[in-house]
Length: 119
Image (cartoon, rainbow, N blue to C red; front, side):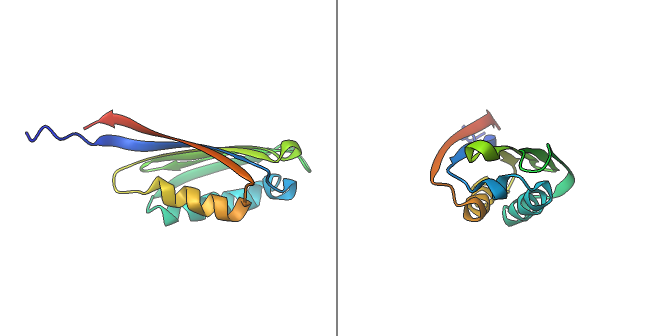
């Protein structure tokens, strides 16, 4: 054994603010966006489920990935989205986040990067 450890996965927690409300209220469009983000990261999508809370209301959704998951919760009335991107293996969660940010164009962003586990 070399004594070199690598994380089991990388978990990104992104708080994105100052987003146009209409972008945060369309469950179908957010599903399409997160699917594209997962594929851009090199992840394999197993299942998705998104729920819109009504016209102009927020969305909650998750993509189940072979590499773990991407989830999102939105508050259009506050221009805010919280995204949770956890991927293991060769997948690149930062690429998923880049695609999400390019679509939402947040005015503010706070991202925490957490290395999960040691292999």
